[in-house]
Length: 297
Length: 317
View 1 (cartoon, each protein chain N blue to C red):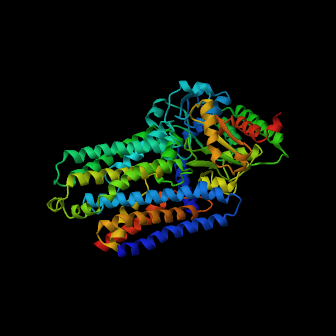
View 2 (cartoon, rainbow over the protein chains, first blue to last red):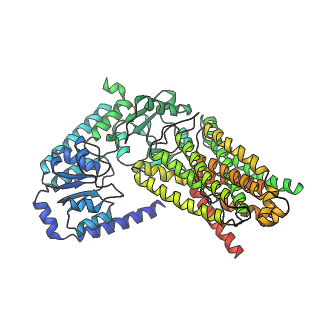
View 3 (cartoon, rainbow over the protein chains, first blue to last red):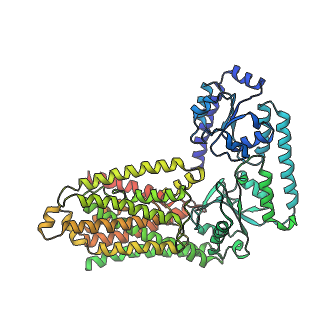
């Protein structure tokens, strides 16, 4: 099954690859010679990266999931991963469109409109810095991109150093659940950017052996995995502290789980945990503070 | 009666065998967590499967008899779609109401099923007794299409994580993780059982035709309403508990009729037992086939139920 899916993904990737190669060379060359002045970025991570490397003023449109930095609130929204609005996008006359690598249809349409593309595909933590460098180079700010990437790398290294040599608690990183009950639990599996963040912050992923980025868990699986720490991420809307505490207490019914027994169930709010951009060090640090509070005293 | 008992034996057996297997697996998982896994994770889940399986199967029997249509199922009259829409609204708009330990999604889902039931009931009330069931059937199909379109609209307004949760919900899940939702679902189900218990003889006659039924002294309108409300309550409770679990409601009644014939005094309880047993079995498959992960049970029932139903159709043809 997995292999079959991989085959399909590969086929789709090839189609996208062929599509990219048909871009007129002249358009590509022109784009690399001139620094783009009107950028649309449908990907929250790249929007943050562009702002971080000082190119925020060149952004003329963002995706529907962009929330950070606050400046994006004033920019036109052009849809998201599944529903990009090609009309609105073309109307902005961008000279660079940053889109998801999987948006093959959109990419073909943009090529027909002679709009240069930066195709985004980040799956693990190390690619955050490399994407920053590539994006910086693409917009004629190679040194700014490199500096931003170095900042991320240095801060991540600092977190790693803080927790080095400490015992690594088996941790379940939950990023989705039906509120008010222990149903529909989704947790980070054995690869991907969240898994990398967790491991860097000094946790041992309780689902490290499950080679999926997202794992749908039953209550039985949580009991059987018996994590020492449960960290639940909350993002995409604001909850008052009382609601967060109420949701945290939902886990109490699994009283045999070590994390519940030792009161190590934590709720962390903020979208830095789900955006693989320049705020990943902040996410890593917040995870590390929860996993190793003694290291931050 | 003897025949009934003979039929009940193996059916109850298949349920308890499933329970034994459930218990065996908890020993194999061998941990000091055994008891918790059994009582927190498994037992509510098996009970949910039994409730949902029996409710959907009985609702299927009633709808097939009432509409005199072998393709009728708990989904046919839009009650199931109403429940789905309610759940999706709760997920998408982050409803935050929890009543005695039951979270917002099942509550909204049950409310949705009641809304759909009200519309269908209105349809059945305006049409005169003895006219074709076509009105009810077409009304139900139209209502389902309408509600599906609204669901599409709600999906469109949902953000990425909500869309994901909506899709997952539509796959069905029996992992209820506590007893409160079960108790909540029991309330409408007990009402439904009481209503259904009065039906078998009248359904036998109605499935032969409304005219001949009323000639034999059946109050057709009253029976139809009791049947409609009971079966819809059972469906609404089942869907709000586990999501739209496919095929149980359409395939089980046919299977049971193959074994016991058309007598509703046998078909109705037989379907309840077989529905419960089969859904428990499907859930065991869902939990074990990709271990340590778990499949949504709705996928298993549809993949297993689809071919069975096709086979039934070929056999009939």
